[in-house]
Image 1 (cartoon, one colour):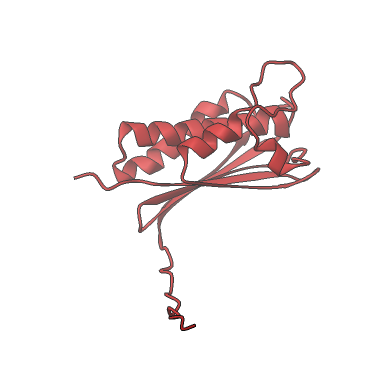
Image 2 (tube, one colour):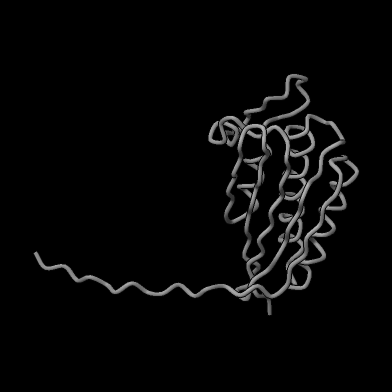
Length: 158
């Protein structure tokens, strides 16, 4: 059996064009601040209203998860937001807390799963982030915190 083996193509390394980092207290009032920071940076790529709404929604969900689950609504924690965009019009946003962490990331990413006992949370945060973004990754360590990183390609509109 003859097989043609294709040579590996080098993947082009993305170049960071612009980025912003922010640190703020884990207070629900700062959810809007995080959304505005992400929207302002992404606005430089001339996104559609839908693209910017998707990004703002994902940021909102990630920050809310930090506040409600990472710090259990204790405003004594910090949230770190890093947003950047690359030369291929891809936006990458990371939201990090140093809270309690997630015991089972795979389970936490299932729709409708929540550790909230009050009944106020739907368990759809990660599902919403996955729906609106092109890629999502979650790194968490119990007692040390969680970092959620997601990406979205902004289409070139002419």
